[in-house]
Image 1 (tube, chains in turn green, purple):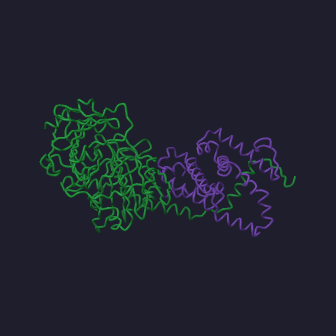
Image 2 (tube, each protein chain N blue to C red):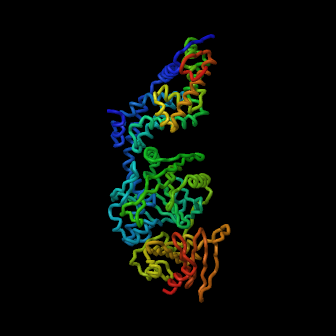
Image 3 (cartoon, chains in turn yellow, purple):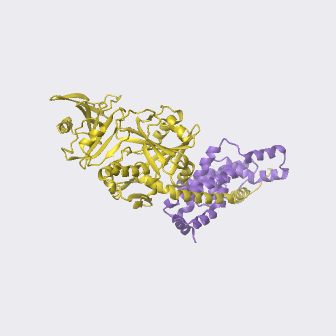
Length: 443
Length: 191
């Protein structure tokens, strides 16, 4: 046969021929040089971003350590118009005072065998370079101010409704560099942060992520989205950042770039899965929901503001503009730990008071608003546990509603709407809820 | 200094150790990727990506002695992903090669030479499935043991052995079509 040859060792033939083929190329040294360069640049960015990331991870509000600390400080100074987000850790700080946060917190770092807790210093420069405040500006106005197209939708996939947004202005040059939108649904929230100028740093940030984090990139039209697994966050006893974490949790966040701005979206109470990320992505690309633009009425406390424990009922009434009944203590050892006033997210022309009562086991939330029944009516499939009804007890009428596995009890007093519910879990019975309502009403 | 010590130093962030470690594996890694993709530009991109991933994740490597298998795992994963992505694209290298063919610039001797040995093996190799081809290249070109390949591809050693056996059988069959004949050990079976 033509070209027939006999080879004793077929394996040797494969080996030799692969060698010959492979040696046809000379790997370029430039590749190694590029790798070194990327590592060097990555490390430079890293130390800066790692610091930021560590702090972000330590705080459940993934995005705005600056807002967070600044907010805590303003809380002490009692200045108006700052925003705190509704995390449990934020609440602890709000209840306990700024001195509890001090200059350090515990952060966690992953190790081969699990994680380590280390004390981490909070540097002053992370507190002072931006001023955050509520803004009622529209997307269009903000786009004009920043010079790039801003899009903050009125709603996010999954039923998260826009509540409010804040603007971060650089102290150095008075430029708007950060817009943070807060979205809420029952006991959960999402935070969308849009950054511009030197605060965007999206390309460096993506490089950092590629070098340091686990991520998945996907494209929709011209957009590149990065769904990133953040470094581990601590699970703090009593949500206290100065108590050694007892475990770790990992949260994902989504980042992308559009018209020179960086967008970052994270969820507050639970992890942010890829499916939700992709659904949210679609609405951003297609601009499914209109912008969240809506001017609020004058006289409304525009940002959600934590109040010190020393705030009196009179002071609260002055702030919200209506009479309130807020006992310090109620049965089952509930104690009022957190006081929050701000705009009613569902009736933006009205003020609202939110009080959180804690007894070491559960958190009971009391909402008082001039707006409307602070209970959402859901388009729900009839659940066999749904015993929503009107209850008449004595001369008072109560609304007992059921949604998502738990109940709320609402009533009206002096033209103001009251509502109580447990933050997690449910009342033992309607009688228990009525008893608490009665205690509040008789205050 | 042996590789495990080097890896330990890398895990502590020693830049020079990274340099040495990367250099030790660089050429073989690029050539592996070249054998998988058939393109130098892609091969270099793959290795760059794999080295950066290696730099990022080396701190999680529990057994430094298993570095080689661990690194090749990254490399194989990256090359498979890039290969899948580039399946339907044509590179400049491909274009210039086909232009040469069209212009008749390759002389008859070189064509004969390549046909007779290297290109025949290589084109036969390209007809194998990606897992088989990867196994063959890791074993015969990168000199990974069956155990290391099993660690790299996350499969049983028996699977690696049977892949090698099947690959040899198929290669021999393909080469026979090109006029090569084989006898003796190592051809897989009764080809």
